[in-house]
Image 1 (cartoon, helix red, strand yellow):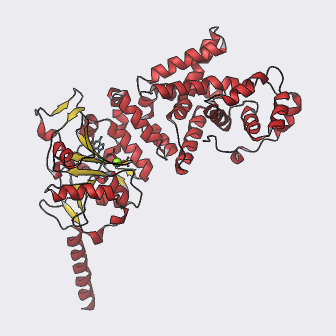
Image 2 (cartoon, helix red, strand yellow):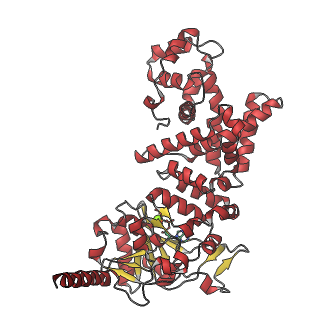
Image 3 (cartoon, helix red, strand yellow):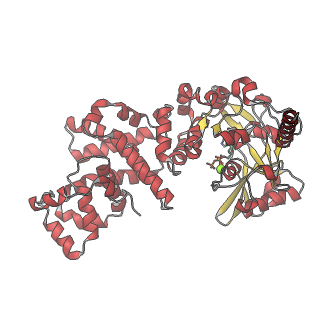
Length: 486
Ligand code: ATP
Ligand code: MG
């Protein structure tokens, strides 16, 4: 009797909890498993009340709330959406705050003096508050539902070329990439609106593409690298049906404009999780379409046996970048590209020297070719490619240490970056006869010490024999300073 009463109470409690969790409007809730083999293909609206989610207003940008409230007060629907809601759920600090609204871009523009209309592929409004920018997008619809309409346009491979089909909030949720990126925060009643069971996926740490994964990757292949980025950043697992097509579809990235891929590469590798992201990119065979020449070197056994540990330099540069980002110090794409393309540049310059070209012109020609080829995959804006070349050009001079060159090199505007790169190469295992340590020391000693260090070099730059003992007393690698400095 008691057992039956207790069982009824437990069952009743569970039912009430379930009903509260699933207070829905409209269609019934589906579990992932009963929809198209785990893919979310149909919206099912769930409203999560304030006491069932962890998002607190005090962690939301005041400016984002101002934008949402203003739109609401003018009779428009407006919500915070995307990465900011996801990150607040996970107790992370959002990078930025995005707003989705029923108002048209022109209506939004009309409501905020401090705003501008941007974009052709996607029309958006940026509302500016000093250094903070709130991005406001009008609810958009999925393309499948709007074939033949003028405002949406696909390439032959199914890639979306233009995307200005407006729709309902539900449409807007379904055209987003991952379920965890399709949660909406309503600042009027502090609820979270979930159409794709994104909250379940947040709780289990799952990245799940909305809709049919193959179609969604064809529509926008960048979603494959976004999957890797979020898996690394959030330490989430990619759902099987979302991960499986990636192995076959990486080649689609070759159709993406190289300027967009440059931006994506920076988001991938300069967001504080570079090492993990690099490992995942390789695991999912997405590094090859982004950096084909580097991938070739990574797989070239002969090259790795020649003492060029291709992977170590890349990992060291990413570790150093991750560390700097954690310390809120600046990072430059030039440094990253110098490391990523170092192996192909060296391999080609070695070939050119074997064909009889002297070292300096061989390096210059090889640098030009390797950077030029890479630009067919990811653009490298001129200011960065010039800096990559400076970093590489200076390596030989830093290694040689010719006495007359020392002061000139110390004054060189790119000395700092080139020196950091030299240290990184040493940390990655290249034998540079202690050049990195020598340049570290010469920056630390006083004038007298500096003169005596320069005197200690032979005319050709190699340290005189007396210096050999000092080199042997090198600190173990783990004790050395980080390879990059301000
Ligand atoms: P981050 O923390 O990097 O800003 P995010 O999720 O906010 O992550 P954004 O690039 O700022 O990423 O995009 C904002 C939102 O827009 C995403 O959360 C997602 O809902 C949607 N989105 C962005 N890119 C795509 C895409 N390629 N396909 C579908 N939806 C996308
Ligand atoms: Mg964002």
